[in-house]
Length: 453
Ligand code: PHE
Image (cartoon, protein in one colour):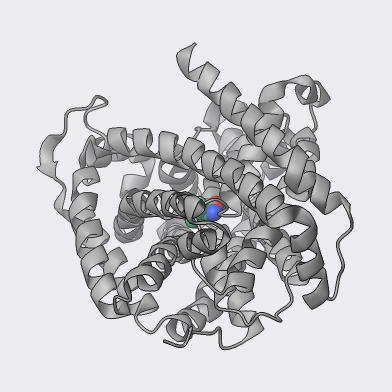
């Protein structure tokens, strides 16, 4: 069977940026930056981007494009004994879609609730009664129907996007990538023109250099870059495999990496400027209104919107803009995860796209119901914690061994330089063979030690 191809280079780049720029950019990055030294966080962030993110992204694209195969098949072509690493990557991708799609289901609901902003003052209570009534492992009151409906909508959307492979994906990303970016700019401008916004941005950007001596800051930066560039799931390998062997790799990787970071910065500005406004109105300090983790998008930000000047209509509009932004930002990440699994199955079992999608989506929907209860968020957190943090690190470490040592970092560099406009230097080889595995092992071990503290 002939391998599907991206219609244009632009479609490929947009799809890759779409995968990278997801919900993590909107709430994870701003929060992590704020927590780890504000402006000073950008130093480890950019170092991690250049030393870990870009080289691994180049390597993943190169492997997919060079072998013209999904992650498991590429690994198997390198050596049969490495095929498992590819399957591990796509299994983690599958697990992530099972709960990421549920979060998309929440967003669909929030979109509806934005039409009725009176809930905005009580977003905390709302969040608790809607999603989180039990804080423990017991699921209260069975499946929450609106979440299940949102979940179904997410999966239906994924089906229509992936149905025709790269051609339908290309059509989708032509708007699902620019739209959230534009919306972030609008939200950012509105935020920055609010009274008190400067104090929010000051908290975000004013550097606390003493944080740079803490290992946690560096670990967080590496983790954020890794998660944000969607590395370690076989996504970028699958996407690379739909390019022809002669497509540019280095240039594309830089565009994807910078495009993704730009989205993170826009989001951070949009979020923190409005938090500054909110703190100002409530007469408190910015740290008093920052809500870590997922609450930033689902409690704090909606609350801030409900305080916007201009009355209900303005608030409704900004609520809608924010949740449309989140939906379109998130959807490209969801279907990229499914595509990584799809490409693996169709390479191995020659199953048709349609059969695969219908089977996978049915399973995804049924498993998603498990997270769609009140209290389901408890389980979602646990899965996210282990799969979203550790599994990708393990795959990353395996990749550096397989690509850096077995295929050879020198061979990869030679290949990517032969097809790319920008040439990368010898540093790439040291990064892939020594620096990245050592850093990732350090991040993994440190995280594991913290678990037991
Ligand atoms: N990169 C996405 C984000 O930052 C999340 C993601 C991780 C998507 C892994 C796909 C795979 O939100």
